[in-house]
Amino acid sequence: MSKRTLHSAEGDIEREDHNWACFKAHQAAEYAVKALLHGLGLAPKGRSISLLTRSIPRELDPDEILDLAKTLDKHYIPTRYPNAWSEGIPTDYYTLKDSRQAVSYASKIINWVEEKWKLLRKE
Image 1 (cartoon, rainbow, N blue to C red):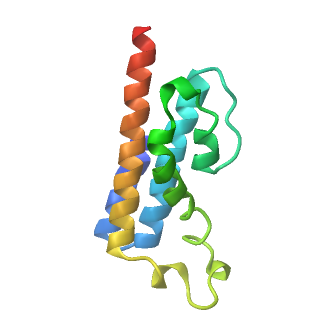
Image 2 (image 1 turned 90 degrees about the horizontal axis):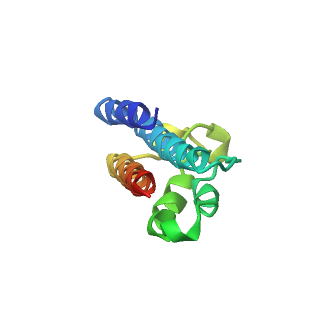
């Protein structure tokens, strides 16, 4: 699910729908972190990737992705809701640079989750 959502975000970049690309990047990373937590037998709650990351056991070193998660968390509400801005709509505020960064960060989080899962399966 996370990779499909990330792929959709990449399509949004091509269509210059940068606010949607940022939102979907957040969603993709959230899905990956929640999948890891489910796999560990933990019940993930909430939408904040950084808070979800804090639920990951310390021995997996979740601090590696914490700053990425904090940046993506900033895209959860304002990418979709016009009332998050003093004027205009979300499309007015998001750029190619924003969407590329968000997709890159989500990809790094997804790859991190995959690597941790591989390590856990070997144990």
